[in-house]
Image (cartoon, rainbow, N blue to C red; front, side):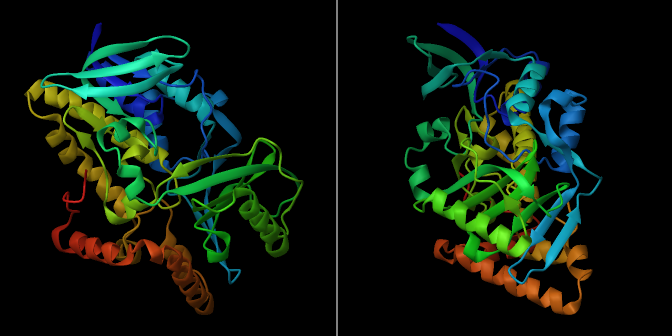
Length: 404
């Protein structure tokens, strides 16, 4: 049986950020990834300015091969049922349009960690001073790694998280997020922007943007509805209301399960004992559904926390939760109505864009947003959001009581 310092599950951006910190500190780090690398990753690829800065500062200049075409994105355009449109440029200029299959692999390679791809995480068992991690190479027998710490950086339906809290994913609302790709006949939507619709009839999360000569039509909704029917409805709406004429969807559609709840209501999960959860597995997700910047920063914090715990001989969970509170503030602030109204928690200036509209359009936008938010009434998040918003105002932070 082999002994290492840290095992990371998932060859994600969060994993790369954690591994970079660990390897730089001289710790033997192994990344276990169930797919063969470079692997496909479902994602818009639209990176935030903060995530862009992180990649440059920690991994260096981005090679062209890790970018889609168009290679950059200027910002976000919000669309409303009243037909008002609000384009907002990112602070600091355009950001990269990442091709996740290659960008994640590039970052993993830059981290310097050892990678075991085509290898599935099976289970973990904690002891006082180590974690026994069981995995299996595709087509091979199960084997065990003895690690001082385990980091789960394996996405929203994280097997590592499930090994700690078997019933977790049944206790939170999960959404299906799917996208189809179309050859373009005519598309008036500005390809320099990521487009998002605050429209209750279109679903909980609807978006579109250009990628490699095709147009993405994306829909998100509570699990249980039919993806193809939802997509068809949205595509017809785009044509009727925006003049977006597309050829029938290509065969390579894709989708995955997501959870939007934790960031809204401060219900994150960070692990237990010597097992840390990071990235989107924790519940980190920015308001426009961008999770890459959260993944990079929380992953780095997880790696730093392990290093700190070893140097100071203190429980890693205590250190991690103290350190990751900064990322909680950044992310949950984006959903905080008081922060949105009186501060600038996002990386594009929503208040400025709103105030630039005529008064009649501002009123329409606020009504449209309110109608959209009613979609989430069934989850009873309203009172929780109001409570944590007041908590943030009064104490300057969010409570850790709801964290797992």
